Length: 109
Length: 178
Image 1 (cartoon, each protein chain N blue to C red):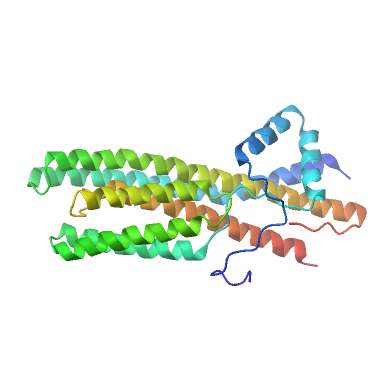
Image 2: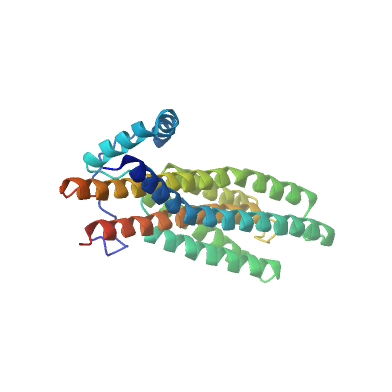
């Protein structure tokens, strides 16, 4: 078995598995930044129009700050999904290589 | 059962230890940094054990559907509130329905192992709705930004799980194809 080629193929599969998640994460972060920017502008506009009080504005901004906790959770969940897919992609390549080299059918996953 | 997304998926073949996945990933990276050959041996060990790695709960189509419906409801109510077209009764009904939906989603999320992030995010989502409800606030854009950002965060968790599920299906097809 060519170990160097196998490692290379496994790394390629693992990297490929992570790419889709990376694009999703980028889109999500852009959407989140835009939502908060628009929301902050809406707070300012509503205070100026007298639609909400200064107290409401403080509450609204506190809620934005609180929401950062879930942003961390979303990034954490995405990271776990990336790691899971990358490891399983590498294992799938290894299973195929082992089957080819030994003739033993290695069931995966 | 696997073809029906409304059912809970079967458990993976890998035994569940209940341990946090973080030390596992840290250990993996640490092994990799020391010697790539050791990483290969480690992965082959996993392979021979005949199991795939499960670090996050599987995608659940019902949770995703409930979340989409909740998002549509929230965005509709926000538009009405921005145009001063939301009655007090409608506002109360909205908060009750939204908090009920979040509770139902939390119950469902608790059925899966490795779902800590989603459960914690749903807890936070419930708090966002409750804070607005308690304040008797009109759900205008200006007051609901934190809530809508949290909704987006929970959606991202579903997106990551769905991509992972599609990816796993691809691996299954590849490994079972002749």
